[in-house]
Image 1 (cartoon, rainbow, N blue to C red):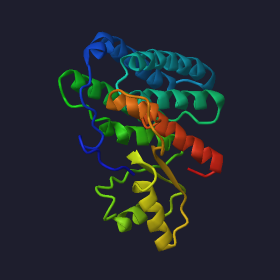
Image 2: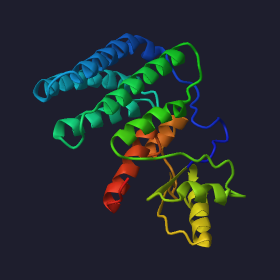
Image 3: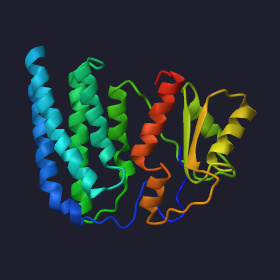
Length: 245
């Protein structure tokens, strides 16, 4: 769950420099399209041949992922990073390569390309629009997740949050605020009042002076509150708790 930023709508990031993206967009498009074509081909092949084709698909994806890391558009490379993880799991035998997995990846590719094209045309950067595709990729791994946007901390909509948390194994609060006295603390208090034992992982700024200055993106990245860092921290917490996702 998240709290709103006082300066921008949920999931938005201001002042994205699309110049670098325009330089590598052709490479990204071609690499993802070639990876998608290899995925489709792999579905028609036997297990031995399929492995080679999937490695080619992963190689093409890696080229696109590298280009996205260079342009550094926050909240976007998490899609290609998650697909790379799916390829790794398929290659190691942890995940079966099925039509559903291939569809999830292909749809994520298409959504990502459309999103980047819209950025280049001047549409505001709102990476939260990619969340449904990211969620589908996680579901392909067996991880189910959702988002609740808390419009206020006080009063807190405890009923909505409690309903969303029903049956889940971990609740994660994310806020551009100190962890102490923020959304996460309010959720913990609400759960205590309701007698809920669901664990809460609170992500926010630590109660310490910051000597790292820069843009909003830079500060969030330094604090481990960018999309990739949040995803990595949540996955590590699930694994440490041995919690089924």
